[in-house]
Amino acid sequence: MSPWLRVLIYLVAAPVLGGLLAGLDRIITARMQSRMGPPLLQPFYDVLKLWQKENVVVRRSQNYYIFFFLLFVIFTGGLFFGGSDLLLVIFALTLAAIFFVLGAYKASSPYSFVGAERELIQMMAYEPMVLLTAIGMYMVTKSFHVDAIAGHDRLLVCALPGVFLGFLYTLEIKFRKSPFDLSCSHHAHQELVRGITTEFSGRTLGMIEIAHWYENVFLLGWVYLFFAAMPVLGVAVALGVFLLVILVDNVFARLKWQAAVRSAWIVTAVLGFGNILILSLWSSPSAEPSARIVGPPAITAPAAAGALQAQHTPENLR
Image (cartoon, one colour):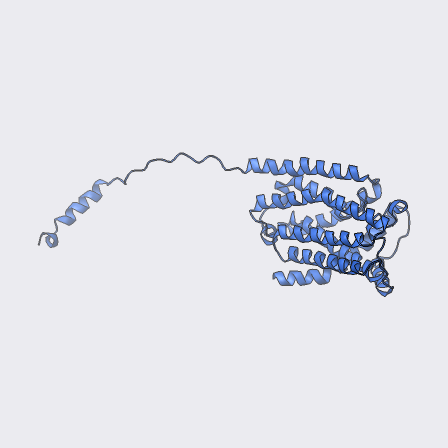
């Protein structure tokens, strides 16, 4: 399939799939809490309603920051599904998060300010593991390009089990789910109201929700990359990981930011760096055999006789 076609499919299908996953998240959460829950399409109704409401912000520049946040999230997914360089994908994803934080800082609200600081702390927690994931994939496939990684003939998870588990741990942070529900505050309303999104409303808040849908589909696509050699298995694992994130969100209590950063760095050091170290030692080239002095090729007896006979032919004697 053409890279441009994959990008086009991502642009159209990602918000639809992301909204459906958000609706599924609400339904499963409600069932686990013995509630009926909203319909599957409720996230789409919410965004449509936000789009019709008045857009009230403290400073107009907040709208521009959130617009660029959405733009760079879409750009990140386009680079990924278009088969671009994985390091460039990580750079674009980080830049999108920075625009999100800057938009919250411009609100000058204490709730929004604390939420923005916690978002930066979460970035410090998950960025090392994300970089190690890209490095591990390069060590196995000898390429940073997503197309080359996806085209590898073996399951990457077999060579990178620790990196995969560490990446799953950071997904809880990236999805902003408990126990790392620190910046957006889905389960800490009494502490931060809505955290980093407190001072956003109307279309701006709707753009944030759509950006999260794009981002979630991109992250699940990265999970699929570990199993790209078996596409059906990769899709099943990506869906299973999403269900696991929902389960952890509803079972575990929220951690303090100190514990979140400490645990993320420990996981990165033990699982991520440990796996990279073992892989580098395992794949280190063996010592080259000592060079042997090779002399000129030996001349066999039949070859010597043939050469002597050719010299004494009548043509040569003339």
